Image (cartoon, rainbow, N blue to C red; front, side, top):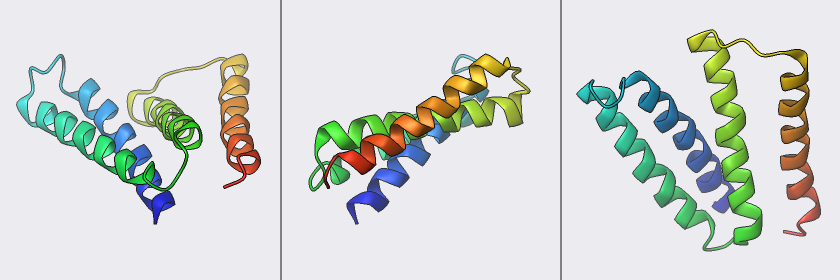
Length: 106
């Protein structure tokens, strides 16, 4: 169950960061509300996950899900352009997240 909470925490991280961009500096109230709800949801899910997972495992995975997800959202929704070198480092981040999980012993 802790891994499900961690996954939802990461997805909420992507949600709030995307909503923050769409809020246009919090001038669009609906998106601003979604940002705050996403932040709270992300924190509460992370809190539940670290009850049974080590913090040193859960936190980097949570931030990694948010980081990689936000890159994907940026490319798909906002048409961000990245060089091949940037994509290389995104792939390294994914490999690092998997490596942390595989070697953490949980």
